View 1 (tube, rainbow, N blue to C red):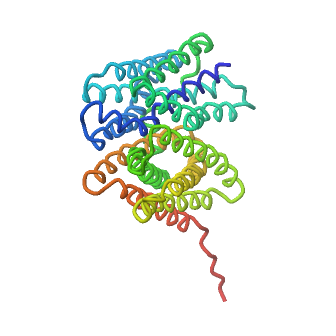
View 2 (cartoon, rainbow, N blue to C red; view 1 turned 90 degrees about the vertical axis):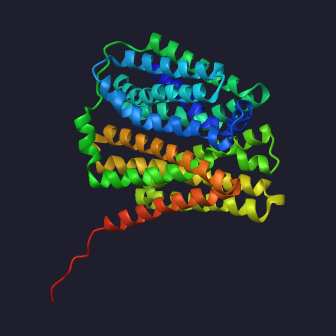
View 3 (cartoon, rainbow, N blue to C red; view 1 turned 120 degrees about the vertical axis):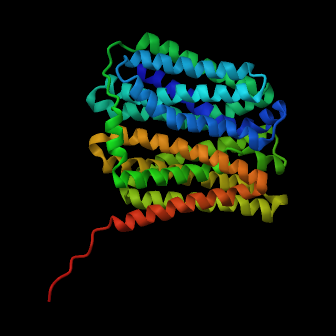
Length: 389
């Protein structure tokens, strides 16, 4: 039962991470700032998560995991409550950074705890159940949060996330035993894994993939509003993306087993880059008939982009099988660093170009990830044996 509370915590964190994309225009209008400025709420959150997660994990290495989870969720809840009452952009920005500290401490701890409380033959399923909270958030939490924000206001969405976090916290306080193993790696162990050349290349690919996706996703609602999408239409588009992401995540895992991680990741990156570039082309070439075509591009983006992720995770585990949790923690930080860079780049695109240019810029980032991935795969092939004679 405690695994379900961990999954609910992941659901709350996933909802908060991704729902902001649909709320940015309303936040910007309410606070009297530009949408590109509001987008830095995403950059600040992601950058704080990327940097804060490993630092907090090492700092709190010797504290009981139950206590760490309670601290993490309490911090996350407090950040959402501050957002509810934030009267200006600086306080809202600070609230997002507070949420990120809580989320960045909670997720790796939750994965470690899920392994500790599960029996050996169920550990894989336990980890999958916790991470499914993030996937389900894209299907249910994000569209629901966006809908609540449109019917009430954006502050109500933060209140909803705080409530979800509070329920998860109460369940974990009641359901988790004390004295759980402290499996967090030391800073030296993390650095040793990070110095591995193949790990560094894999982290670069993750950064570029995340950068490309969040260049567009951060400002998800902006080009849609230009097509005449109302709040309900944006919620439908977010639901489309979430369903596609869930399908892509499952499909990517299956294909990685059958085709291999290199081929599956390459297909995912190629499809995602094509979908993002198509997103821009549709908006520029056929704006009067783009509604369904844009939804199609969003669906292809969700499937292909999230088909890449399980293949990438599997390949990273194979690089460092004895230190897989460390490598995956580094990959999570790389992903959020990419989210931060993507949010900043998307804001620059809106300032210098237009919303219709977000797709091709994001697609260029994913194409760069594909290029690095293909070079890595080619260099990793067995060298042909020369036969004398």
